[in-house]
Image 1 (cartoon, rainbow, N blue to C red):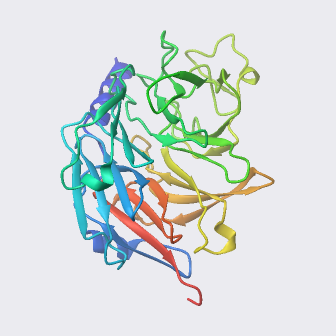
Image 2 (cartoon, rainbow, N blue to C red):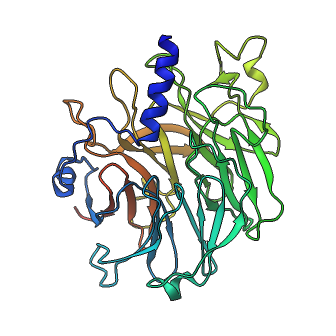
Length: 375
């Protein structure tokens, strides 16, 4: 009964978009409490964007932003180039958790729970967006782990993922707990990898074009197990362990009996349990110092059921010889010493000038991080 109660509470919290200590603080007051490395500054790029989630960059300086339960998709412009978006367009409303956004050749692609939409000629029609066409509509409708991250790969295809419809289970349909891709016209849908509980962030490594993705570990194995993961996909049919094994060697107590964790692809990097690693981006800009270039920024959304909260930060995973070797805190302060949560970072995006955007779905804002030499 206790286990059932925990599952019901988990489902309720996810459905309501739970965030610990959700009393909001003014964005300016939050920014004043954030810690950034020397030489960096953080400011407010946009506000009043409830539940803002994934970010994408279009042409002409337009930033697109998806949301969760708000059902809206935004376009933002900093026309006067003062570091803050003064123009906001609502491109869509009433959608079903339109988390994922991606832009290519004048078209905006939006991923809802069960389908991918395309808005053609979107930049010419920001004030009166066109009716979208449906690219693909055969994805599962489950809301549990239903967020769909969306990117355009180096091959020009749309990449997204289908989370497990549960905390821990072994779904019968192969599409669950998978990484998938499809052509931009909706053809040639294929499952790339399985055993992926819930990824809401991936990116391609500069130079190698290797596909890395975050993955959130299961709940109810304690405060410190299992780790959240950073994985690298290499081949079609690859299996990353869920629900049988977690991390590199943790057999699941319910589904791991008779399984060998060595049969599955281990993570290339392990984060602390429950930090909820979401959006990831390799830094391809030139504004930040050399130390950050081609390294991986990771938004840790923060734990929701850990006895001592963890996460609520942006970290930098550093690579050597194309493999992750270290991790450091880039920005923190969203979790106070008193364990009050001021915000929850979701996604990161590098702008053409090399500055970095970070979305915060609890506060409903997008931050802008800049570096100035000589500071």
